[in-house]
Image (tube, each protein chain N blue to C red):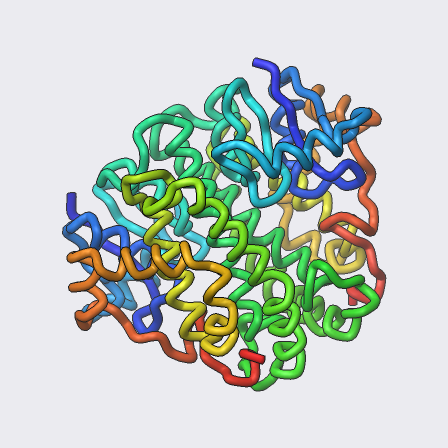
Length: 234
Length: 234
């Protein structure tokens, strides 16, 4: 199956969770909006058909056009051995992914607490307050939750010994947090040894390692979800 | 199948989307935390087992314990005829539900833009700004999107002629918005005739009508997701 992935071309954003799954699976895909004329194709697809997406990312897979990051991963996971085959395991990995994406909204809103359509510098005062609450309260709650889940599977991931797509997304979350909040993450590193070990294990997987070193991996930047603003790092 | 639903007892919250599906299906369920000793049971379940939820709501269905509102509805929808049976239709309804829950986070954050653990009056200044952006930009974007989807199925719902669980969730979203932003919603009512027609059709369904009139339906209040603060209504 050939896949066409559609997402804003300048940022990792939510599409990065999908790219990591496609790369680990060795899937045949094109990142359409990063090709010539691709942005026009993306905008056209958003306006047409029976099932128009609300927003990118979305994926064309045969006759299916599907959106919502967690749902795209639910779809891909079953087809590329990146999720358990039994119902309980399949639902569990989807549940982990949905929780990671809830976390992602909170990470994003540290720099955009008032509105996604406004510039950061127009909501910096509010961002300082939201980021302080995030560092003190939400970050440890989410990291502690996932650290405890990994404790159930020593040397494994969220679904046990075999890698699942939510492990890739957890890698991306830790990677992004270390970019956006380097001081905070360094100061609490010892509390989350399993998260950091999983981050290292995923980064060392041959296909992921090759991907991260390639031009296909867009660098973190201050247009994306994970942004480095030193003042928000406490 | 007997279901046990777990959620905070004083509010509709995210569980309301699940309750509406269970009620429409005529399913056998208990709202555990609203029964004697139920809160203790809920807190215990959050700490135990192989698949602990990050937060309520969660559902016990036989040996499965599953969390995340959209995933619970994906599970229930397939079992109670509240979603299409084909893959494209099943994914589409899940996609709609995920978009509605993204919308819900933005609705919630109008009164809690800084932190869910802080009181409203401690973030009222920021809430005024976030709510203004929400009314001007996000509310019309989401409502316009769903209005356009309904235009594809005159007199039907998001998945066509047959009711799906995302239609029930869309009903709840409109119902909550009319509670929280009465002036704003009244002023734009004519722009969204299909959303209001769907709201009325769902409210008139026999099981939903009986549920809404029962003590099982917790009234909207200012501890929930949809809160009426006149100053945020513009």
